[in-house]
Structure formats: C-alpha cells, structure tokens
Image (cartoon, helix red, strand yellow):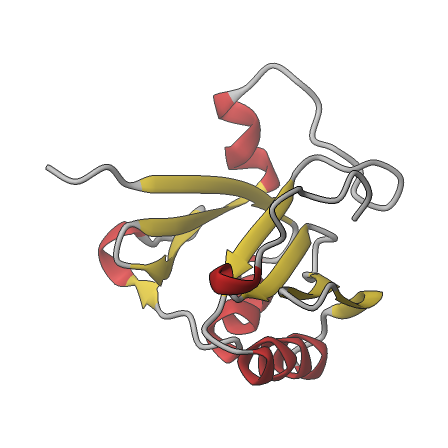
Length: 140
C-alpha cells in the first residue's frame, strides 16, 4: 500500500471551502465527504480533509488556531512551471482567497503565496532542480 498524506484543516463554511478548492482544480472525493467534512484530492496520494470546526475539535483538545493572528502550518505545493504557479494564484484570488506575499524569484525557484478562505497559508512554487545552487541560501 502506498503512503498517503492527509492534511486536516478546520473550516468555518464547508460548502464555500469545497467550492474554493474545486475552483483551484482540486476535485472532491464524495466517498469521504459528508456534512462534517470533505476530502479534497490534491494528487494521487495527497488529500486535504476540510473539517467544520466543531468536528475538527473532536480530534484534538487544543484550540483551533486563529489564522488571522497566528500561523498553524505552511502548506507547499510544487507545480510544473512558473505559468502554472501564476495560474493557481489567479484561481485562488478569483475564488475568494488572498494573494498574501509578493512573488519571490530565486532564479532556480519561483514562489507565490495565498491564504485560503479560512486563512490557511499555501505556498505554490516551481523549482528547476537543475539550477539549484550548490549551497542553499540562508535566507529565502
């Protein structure tokens, strides 16, 4: 069996969150979707479980992070080109997300950042592995 990654995120409005991710091009797996949560397919082995806050709270005694004032996680997705990175950001903004940090171009890597409807921090990037410097920069 292949290893799968399931990233769980708390959301305030499940229907809006499903629509947001679908507009980015990520389908919903109806087999793992109900009124408490939805399974968003990022790739063959990568899924985002978007869970309404009350249901999310059943998995942890910790408080849900206030994404307006604190960072809970940086979610990064690689894409196959700079153009696809820009397209993903355009889709995210059109679907109601926020273009959060100006684009960063390191020559060998191009990165854009958006916040989803619930303030979760997404980094979308293209990396040309043949151009990675022999020593990684200390600041990015």
